[in-house]
Image (cartoon, rainbow, N blue to C red; front, side, top):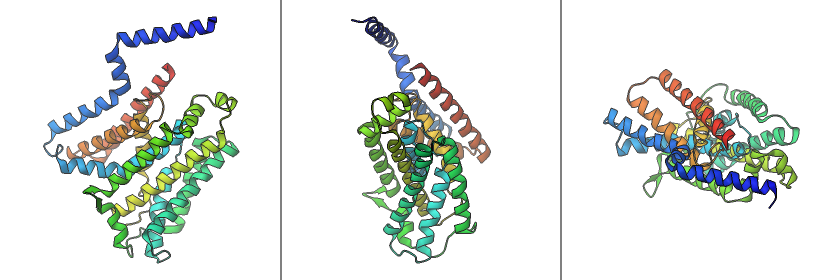
Length: 334
């Protein structure tokens, strides 16, 4: 055995022994966020008798469903180390497009209007992907610029006005309806979670994304098609943001120009929370789901306790800072 092989074997054995001596510490490091979610639920349940009810838990799931979809979308490019800051503007524009096309009679079919809107989201993601993977702009700069462009398109299209009239009930009933007594929003969010999980954790594309995120140079050397893989990831993010924007507009019963603004900070929060567990330091689907639940429970619990929007924003920002710090720290350790 070579000296290098001996060293690697020794290091692995040392790590294994260390983990064997502290299984509880290892568990807390990998699943501490899930445990914190349980403790948060217990705290709010004890603090208010309005929290621990079936109706309220259902409300939490309904509230986080669109945000979870956005979070799942940006989980894909973040696995490769890319960010998508255009998701909020993308979602806002999607809600306006879907309701506008239906209200103006440009498209009479609700499914077709939704399909066209998601296609527009895919085109936006493709634009981001070309800027990042082909032209070579940093993803933060490229998607920030795209966010500004979309904000301009949003204002031009809507004139800064919301769309309330002429929206068919069939569109509004998407968010209000259910499938086998399960609200449609929850079913769609679960379906998106399954698709993204299979893509990231069960398909070669996911392995390639994680490889790119770990080492760009090594990924190139082993023959991974880096540019197409990064483009696909940003297209998925764009489609997810558009879908979330459509569902949010359906729930609101209107197309509102700035409806998706909160998705950006919220989705980053849930993904970074997710990076503190499962594949620590890396964006992953199970972690994003737990992060979304944590975010939703926190917002809902604070609201029930009468904490104002300023306090909720402070709490969200604090959680994001802690999550990012922990995820970066753990990634550097691994």
